[in-house]
Image 1 (spheres, helix red, strand yellow):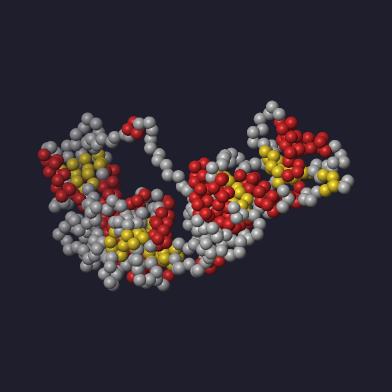
Image 2 (cartoon, rainbow, N blue to C red; image 1 turned 30 degrees about the horizontal axis):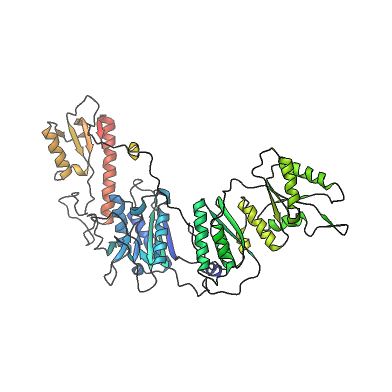
Length: 552
C-alpha cells in the first residue's frame, strides 16, 4: 500500500517520507491496430509531457523502470520511446534500466504498482535491485547506443544531487502513464528513540495484533528487546506507534503499561492467547449501593458507556433499580433478558463483579455459554483503558488513532511476517503434467495437402523461413502455388523482425531508413504493423470465397 500526502502534511504528522512525486502524465493510444500493438508516438508524448509539465530535465534521471512486456513488438516500441525522450547522458555514464516483471512476472491490471513500489524502495535505500534472467541482449535494439544499461546485479545508487527515476506503465486498453520520482529530502532533526522529552504521567494502552500465534509472540519479544535497548524511550510514543501501525488481526494483546513496558512485554510473550472469533455484544450492568442510607453511584452506566463510545466501543447501559427494592430479582430479570438477546460480555464495577459472576453462573448452569464473560472495571482512567483493551481483545472495534493523540510516531520494529513454504503434498510429482510436443498436419484427419500457398512478409524469396518451408514441401512432393484460390492449404508467414531492425529480412533490397543508430524509425514500425494486419485481413477475405484450409 502507498500513502500519498502533501509535503507539509507529512512533516506535520512526523511521517517518514520515502520518495517525492515530481510529476506524472497520462494519455491514451485512442483507436489502434490491435490490443497488443502499442502506439509509439503516444508513448513518446506521455514521457516527454511528464518532464515538460514538471519542469524536470530528463538528463538528471539516472534510472528508468520500464514496463517491460517481454514481447518483441512491445519492448521494441518502449525502448524506442525511451531513446526519444532520454538522450545519452553528457558524461557518458549509462542510464540504468530495469523491469520488476523479471522478478515476479506480469500482474496484469496491477502491473504498475510493483514497479512504483520497487522504485520507491530503491530510492529510500539508495540501491538498485537487479533485473533477472538477462543473458543475451536482444538484437532488436541497441541499448548501449541509446545510453541505457540493464541493472544485472544489485548495486549502490549514487548521484551528484537528489536521485531521480522515471517509471513507465502501459495498459491493455491503450493507456500510457509515466511518473517521475525523486529521492526524499533529509528528514528534519527529530528526537530519536533515546532522546526523551518529559515522560507523561498516567498509564497507556498498548495494543498488538497479528495473524497467527507465533507472529504475536515474535512481535512481543522483538518489541520487548527494542524497549530494553532504549531505556530512556518514551513509552507513550511507543504505545502510540505500535497501536496505530497495523490493522486488527485475530490474535490480539492489550496491556496497560507505564515504565514497566519492557518487563510487561517480555512476560506477555510467553502468556496465553486465543484468536478473535466474532465481535462481542457487550452491556454495562450496574446497580447503586447504599452509603449512609442513600444510593452511592459515582459513575452511572450511561456515563460509562458514553466515555467508551468516544473511543469507538459500543456498549449498552443496563440499569438495575436501587437496593431499596428487590435487587436480586431485578438483577436476575435483567440478566435473563441480556442472555436471551445474545449478549456475551457483561461489564460491571469492580466491587460488584463477584456478585454478577455468581448470578451469571447460577443462571447458566448446565448450558453452553463458553463465550460468556464478566469483566470488572474501575471508574478511573486506568480502569477505562483496561476495559477498552479487554473488549478489543474480544473483538470489539477500537479507535486507536484517537487514543494515540498527537504523539509523534517512532520507528518501532515492523510486523514479523512468517515465512512459509507451500509445496504440494504428499507427492509433488503426482501433480505435474508433462507437456509433449507432437507435430500434426493442419488439415482434416485423413486428408493430405496437395498444394500449399505461402503468403505474408515471411514468404518472400530470400527469407530464410519461407525458403526453408518451400524446400521441405518439395522434399515431400508438395508444390507451392502462387495464389490462394489454387491452394489446398494456405500458410501466413509474418516476418520475425520489422524492417530496419538488425537481423530483419523484411524489405530486402530496399534502403533501410534509420535515425543513425541502426534502429528503425517509428514510421517503419507503424508501416510494418499496418502491412501485416492488412495482409492478414485480405487473406481472410480471400479464404471466405475459396473456403480453403487455413493455418496461421
